[in-house]
Image 1: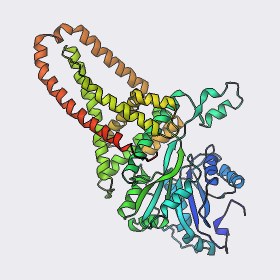
Image 2 (image 1 turned 90 degrees about the horizontal axis):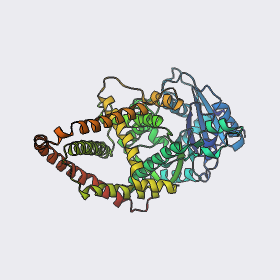
Image 3 (image 1 turned 120 degrees about the vertical axis):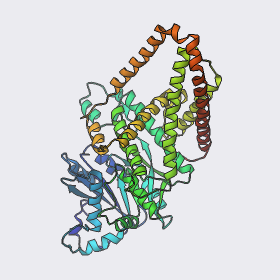
Image 4 (image 1 turned 30 degrees about the vertical axis):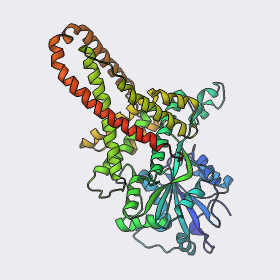
Length: 499
C-alpha cells in the first residue's frame, strides 16, 4: 500500500483500531523528517495501526514534499492536509485535521461519507497531538497508550519533555562545505545557546518532578506530544458548541483545552515513562517571547472572567504567581536595603544570609543531577547558584512584562511576537538594558562616594535607622518563608520520580 493515502478514495477496507497523529507544520521542511522518524521508530499496541496527518499550514517551503517523501521512505501512512489563509495558526491547523475525520459542522451542505470514512471515525481510538520539531523517544507512544487506556476517565496523557542539547558549534570546521547548512539545521550551537538549553531543560525537569510528586495530574497537556481520547475531545466540541476542540481564545490553547477536559471530569496526566525531545529557545530574545506568550496566556486564563473555567490546579497556579512576586520583592528589597546601609555606613554582616544561598545551591545541585542527560558543567554551575540566578532574573523580567501587559488596554499577539523573534525579524533590547543598569549602578556608587560625608552624618543615620531596621526585619521573615519553600522542594526531590 502506498504510504501516502487519500482517505476518501478508499471504499471497502476493514478498518483496524488506530492511533491518529496530528502534526501542524508551518514551514518545517528542515525538521519534519526528524519528527516522522521518531514516529516510525515507535512500537504500536497489538492490532493497532498509526496514521499521520501532517497539516502543511500556510507553508511557503517544501514541507508537504518532505513529509510525503519521508512517509515513502519510512513506510508511514502519511496524509498531508494543506491550509491557505489560516489566521488561527496552530489552532486552525489542528482543527483542520479534526474536521477531516469528524466533519465540519460549519459546512452549508452535508457531504455523504464514503463507506471507509463511516468506519474510520469510530476506529480512531486515540489522537496524538505533536509539534513538527518534536521527536518521540523509542516506546514513548506505547507508554502514552498504556496510560490513556488504564482507565475510562482519562482524557489525555502527556509525555515528559526534554530539551535537545545542540551539538558543539566548534565541532564544525569553517572549511566544511556544508557549514552553513549544518548551522541552519539547528543541530549545532555555541556555549551560550547550550547554556540556555540546559537552563530550560532543568526548569522543565523541575516542573515535571513537581507534577509527579503531587500525583501526576497536570494543568496543561503540552502540544509537543500528548495522546488524547477522542470521546473527550468530542465532548468539548459538543458542550461548548465549537467546530473543533482547540480554541483561539487564548495564547495557550493547550492549557485552555486541558482546563476544559478537567471541567468535564476527565483526568489529565503526565506519563511517568514516555519521553519527547523538543527544541529549546536558544537566545535571550526568543526565550523571552516564548515565555511572554506562555505566562501571559496563563495569567489571562486566571483573570479572564469571560472564560469561566477553573482547573483543579487553580490555587497552585496563583500560589506560583505569588511566590514569583515574593522572590522578586526579596531581591529588590535586599538591593535597596544594602545600598542605603552601605551608603550611610550602617551595614552589619550576618551569617544568616548564607542560609538561603546554601539552600539554593543544594536545590539547584539536586535538580541538575536529576535533569536528564545533564553535563558535569551543568551540575557545577547549578551548585554555584550564579547561573540559575541569571536565568531567574530573566523570568522576573517576563513576570513584570506580563503583568504590565495585563494592565494595559492593548492586547498583544503572543504567537506573532514569538514567530517574529524566531524568524529574526525583531531584536531584543538586552544590551541596552544591561547598559542602563550598569550606568545606574555606577551613578549610585559615584553619588555615594561624592556625598559620603553627608550620607554618613549622624542626622542621616538617625533618620534612616528606623526604616532600615524595619526593612531588614521584613526581609528576614520573607527570607525565612522563601527558605522554607526551598526546604520543601528539596524534600520532594528525595522521591524516586524521574524527570
